[in-house]
Image (cartoon, rainbow, N blue to C red; front, side, top):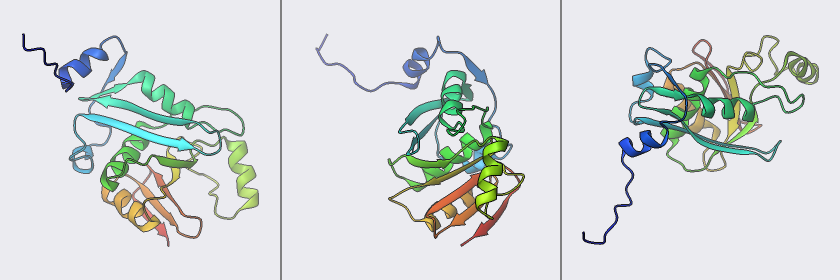
Length: 190
């Protein structure tokens, strides 16, 4: 024995560490996921923080074709409607779009969450205050997120999100955020 220790964790060891954690076996949610997640590797991670709640999340939610159920549950709670403290299952495609976009932006800064899931009541309240809130918002369906990064421009974030080809991307330059959803592919804003 040489006395040296190997500090590199192999994928096999990492998978072993998660062996006791329940996982959801699945191919990537999108049929074209390999295209927009190319280079993402066999491990997917999501890192965000919320100024509204003061909470942060930094978790591996997918390993070699398997979603990690406890990580998704943690993400659902993080994305909750903080006004009503109500939780909804966030569409897995939305998690993948966020992770892929973040990966393309090549930054360690977590996304700042502005809006995740919204209850119908919260959405109606916001709609009464702003014409920019959709009546049938994807936020209510658990399929949309509004985020920003201080290290990247709205344009950079929007271009990365559009290149994922995973849903709607709205640019809100005046308010300094990007809307991403996993609905039909479309773009808007400036």
